[in-house]
Length: 54
Image (cartoon, rainbow, N blue to C red):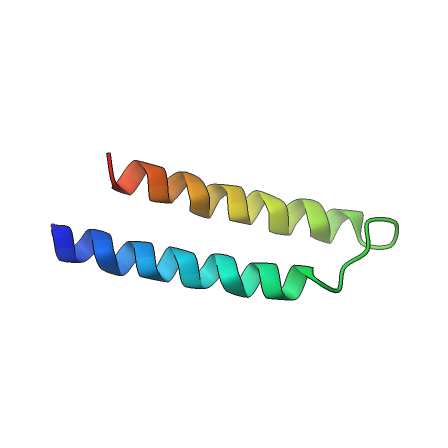
């Protein structure tokens, strides 16, 4: 179980980094929907991290 937690945590952090990388060039005025969508995805990945270690 511990190995699964470590692998899942690593993948979650990697995905959050990739999402953050692609969010850097977005502007709120032009791409509101994309900013909201990417932010929601990051929140879901962060919630998954908290759930996996409980």
